[in-house]
Length: 249
Image (cartoon, rainbow, N blue to C red; front, side, top):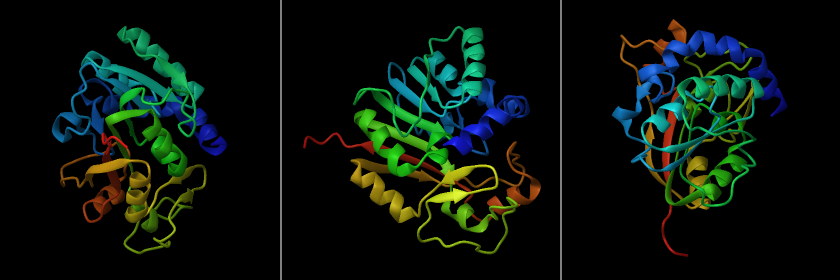
């Protein structure tokens, strides 16, 4: 966590300046590297009147948009600089969005506090899923959803972790994927079967797995031309939607 915190503290303001147009306004409620609208994917389900937790909220643009849509969102992040930026946007929007500084591996909430827990390349990428997924399940109410966009295992085995170059060759083992050490950050991902096992062990039932595939005309603020071309052949990101069982034990 210290490595990732140092990274986000360094790059927070530059990231916000660079990506503000892609993240704000009508694009606030959109998923992943290609900003696919939630209105198209419909992964969160009915949000009006729901208690929603965003883990890794960044500048809280998603949370602000959700508040305007009638939900009761809480934004959580571990980066003080991100949260200061979020606080400015929340005040400017006059949105009822509480902001919490905490680690998604140890959520500071009572069990069954939320109807939805979600993140868009947030805490489920930068925190250990063996800790963050059980925590998300703990704070979800029965029938509640966990939805998150993160790195695909395909990307994890084909991207050079020293240069960030993604090519057509497999560079790393697929089996045993977990902690990915890059030059200035740590990411986490798992093989598909291990994700499924982890969900089931935490009473989470899979609803959907979206593997985004852009059209030739699509542009991403996060990927260069070579990476964008790669994603048209292989999955670069995964968006999981899982639901907490409502069965009575």
